[in-house]
Length: 473
Image 1 (cartoon, rainbow, N blue to C red):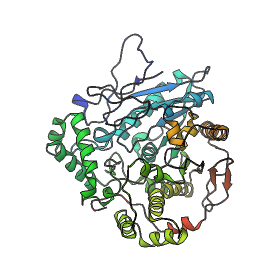
Image 2 (cartoon, rainbow, N blue to C red; image 1 turned 45 degrees about the vertical axis):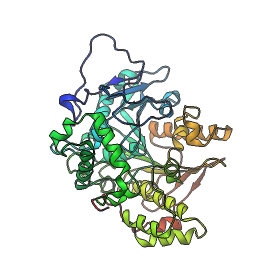
Image 3 (tube, rainbow, N blue to C red; image 1 turned 30 degrees about the horizontal axis):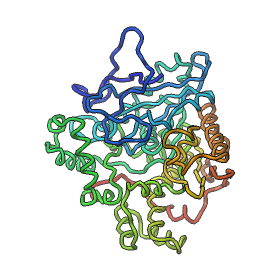
Image 4 (tube, rainbow, N blue to C red; image 1 turned 90 degrees about the vertical axis):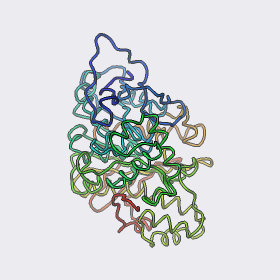
């Protein structure tokens, strides 16, 4: 079933506010098509585009096995990624059919992205997209038994900003008790202080020709703010307020506002705030290869540019020296992409699992390492494998061509680990402990388990902090 409303249209009197209850309907509602997507400019393969005037954007989709007793099956709830700026649950590689065949009730949701979901508006709640996700999870708790799902056995899963959303939900009071397990693929480390979120709003308001106040921003239509956000991102390299935007123009991130999101999620997890949630974390070996290939990040080819990059991300100089020593023959671009991928995804994801285990939670760690001549283990390549959607529209671009028999076998193993974890909390390899970090490497043609993740590369990151991004960083 597709396009079921879980909250009211977040426009008009509800714009920039926390999600409100959905309007009830009489009779039978047509739920055979995905609902409209949130305001954005992205045009993704096989997925719908946003059309100005689309309003009923807060919907969920449900896939069920052929037969199930009411309230009996584990629930798998997926949050799509897209840099907190674009994407939807209707993307073909997120289809839940294969996971439902594995014995899960699968749910996905649309939520507010871009300025509507994550733009800072004084006097209104920050992190509205996160509040939408929590509202969708409450819908699951209240309604999923009617679809055969067990509301007491919910696993929330996500990739990229979807995974980042989950770490925030693990720290949020509004989501407490709504899920039992979490699967996070490629968790981004970027989080904004309120001051940086406000500076981004000022830039977007200037591009839209309105005041950076609640009244000014409400006077701009969603389409105007999408256009203004795109312009601000395109010009972000010249903005001295946030040095990171000279290299990565993503303007929207969760805001640690002390209310919706009370603390840096990594610190919250380290303090044991989510120790009751089982965690399965994964990242790819070459995250930023993909982002470079699609032109999403600035190219760096000189040592001086690499030093500027490290300073912009507040990374210590010894990291630059260490990567050069470990890969002395690698071009600067390769070292830059490796450092960027580890800083933004790889090391952060790994550390999340380690902190969770040391705080008393149960955590498992995996890395996607599958290679083919025309394909690298880059950001997003793991998603079609884990969903079992190797033949979905656009999947060939993500995985580097048509899948072969080895790919299909790897996909079956990854999907099974997701299903087993969602069912009973055990993906099939040892958990991280306070002293050791076992890592499952999803590889071609065979997987392998590293008993402990003690490498020279990990040692470089030992004392690197992951603090909030602030103006000037």
